[in-house]
Image (cartoon, rainbow, N blue to C red; front, side, top):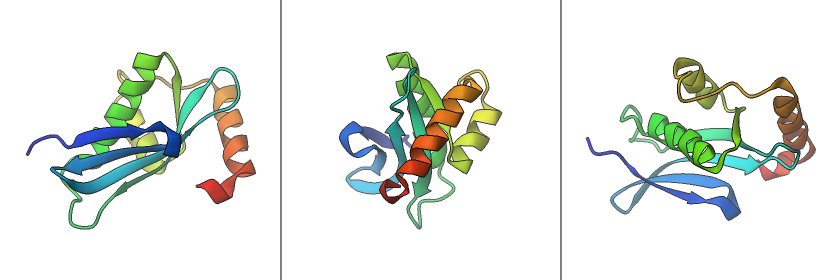
Length: 114
């Protein structure tokens, strides 16, 4: 199976996956306000009928690749992203606890956005 095409919509906090023109999944995220900035994964969702194709893994891998290219950390608050990170330590550095605390505080302060 071909890798999905992945598009980052930073303004909306969505890393979206497509098979052809069909939307198949997303990582919903935000950029933390605290320094050092981090990309914070909140949800990873694969559309019904597209599970088991590696879409979620491709999305999270690209999420970490974007962060690496930008020189920022990733905070995987999404359970799937956290599990993926634990299984791929060479691609997913563990963020410092103070960065994780700041990301959790920002998420808690704005739950209506997520």
